[in-house]
Length: 261
Ligand SMILES: C[S@@+](CC[C@H](N)C(=O)[O-])C[C@H]1O[C@@H](n2cnc3c(N)ncnc32)[C@H](O)[C@@H]1O
Image 1 (cartoon, rainbow, N blue to C red):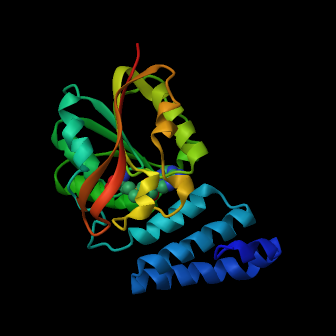
Image 2 (cartoon, protein in one colour; image 1 turned 90 degrees about the vertical axis):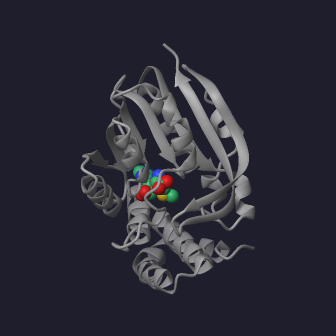
């Protein structure tokens, strides 16, 4: 029996009125003591409580990530771009219109803006969006940042020359929906560049969710073939050096595909 199985025996109204408010307070304390295992446990508890209560993913994602990004002085994953996005960015056409999905505090957006591209972003965390804007403004760039849960994203067809995303960890059905929407919003020949933690990341302590529903296999991406051609799809062990949030050896899936005409 895992640590949460006992929750199945508690009435839903007890979750809503007693466990959820306490668990949210507990979450704030867990961040203060900065213990990854405690944060993980409490966050899973909060998410289980909220999903029992019927709250939206937005509330879960927003609350969790606003707390994670709360330190005004720190960029949790640093301000340097994700290595895979940096490695693939020479493929981008000059002056591309790029959408950064689940962009967090803006490190990939800054890199791509510096290369002369026009950047839009989507993220569920209001704190992340404020930090993105601040980071880009500090370097003389602007960003068109949309505060939205990807669950409710209505993609504009044929709008972007590329999508870039790193460590966007969504429940698998939502990932699938977001990949389909990504194809809709890309122009012909446009690129999707993404790095994600693989399921094998459960064996590493360099960051990422501990929830297997938000960790992926190659098949989670390879099952999407319609209207796209994979240029690269591989699982590998890399060394992450991204702020305090991602440090050390990690198992990742690197995804690069092109939308067909
Ligand atoms: C691990 S962080 C990665 C941030 C950034 N891509 C980076 O690599 O620095 C995950 C990001 O996904 C966002 N996110 C999580 N669930 C989301 C959802 N349902 N809709 C939109 N954004 C979401 C979080 O707010 C957070 O900014």
